[in-house]
Amino acid sequence: MTAPRSLILPRPLPLDSGQSLGNVEIAFETYGDLNAARDNAILVCHALTGDQHIASPHPVTGKPGWWERMVGEGKPIDTARHHVICANVIGSCMGSTGPATVADDGAPYAMRFPVVTIRDMVRALVALLDELGISRLHAVVGGSMGGMQALSLAANFPDRAARVLAIATTSRHSAQNIAFHELGRQAIMADPGWNGGDYYGAAEGPEKGLAVARMAAHITYLSEAGLTDKFGRRLQDREAKGFNFDAEFQVESYLRYQGLAFTDRFDANAYLYITRAMDYFDLAEEAGGSLAEAFRRSDARFCLVSFDTDWLYPTSESRHIVHALNAVAKPVSFVELSAPFGHDSFLLDVPELDRVVEGFLG
Image 1 (cartoon, rainbow, N blue to C red):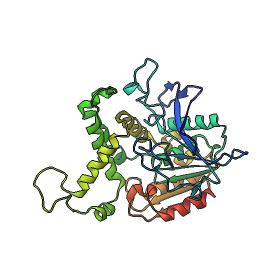
Image 2 (image 1 turned 30 degrees about the vertical axis):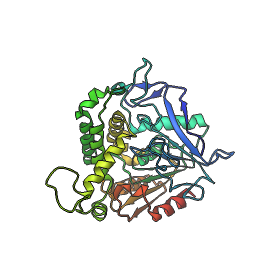
Image 3 (image 1 turned 180 degrees about the vertical axis):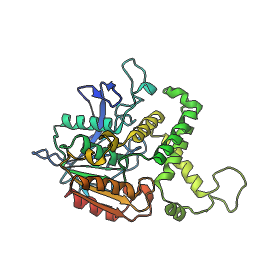
Image 4 (image 1 turned 90 degrees about the horizontal axis):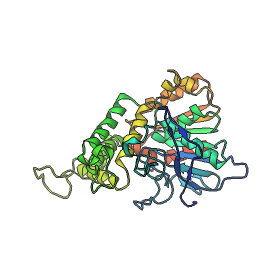
């Protein structure tokens, strides 16, 4: 691994809103060497609450990189053969420009930060590739929101990647997806500590609201079978019900822990901005109403992967993308994998996924 890096994009970044963002900083990490031909680079795009620390310890939590099991020498994304790049998206809070960034007037942007889209995030990633001197990727890979970015790159920058691997993702957010995100946003904005987004430097921010938002979202990442197997209706550290509103069930205790731990590493305003970007995502809409047309100019090979217990982005969403690619005669493979973990399966130990990733990336 190289040391964590960042750079300032030399030109203002145009946004879908019609605004532009200047002095954009992109934080990223790289693994493995870029070859002389500069054609062995793999861009890995992270999910909603992810970051650039894909295969190195997180600087706040100290936990292993979020895809350490997948990226490294001899692993499915083999850094002995490939130069792997992972960058923090704009709008986030792990080094790339976002609402917590100090603006030109010396104060954090907060809610003055412009609303960004998945396509804006991809524009920033492509600008990063330009600065790194990489004109064409061996592959772009991503799961969940990362899969959205991979598909968006294929649609909007059709000559920049030879392979596109999109895992547990969708081509547009459904009404149910948007509803869950709105629940989280309202939890944050209802917290008095949010203060209209102006809480930087305050003694207390919207930690309670952000924790609730994370709890609600985390439920969508799991499967009913997985929750039942892991927790069932078992009580937490007690033999009988207490007839109160403490975390009496193990699953309650687990969710509270997940919510509180999340507030240590993530910014509430960033959560608002990134979930809004995901809600705006609709590749067919961008292409005039036809998902197939979105991919017509791409010359990449595609691979779509779904999981049978993922109800957030179910297999039907991947099939929809595959059908659109078939309609414009694009080379595409598709597999639905069986795993008990729900949407989070792409992050967990699913050996079949390892084999798919390794086989597709070559």
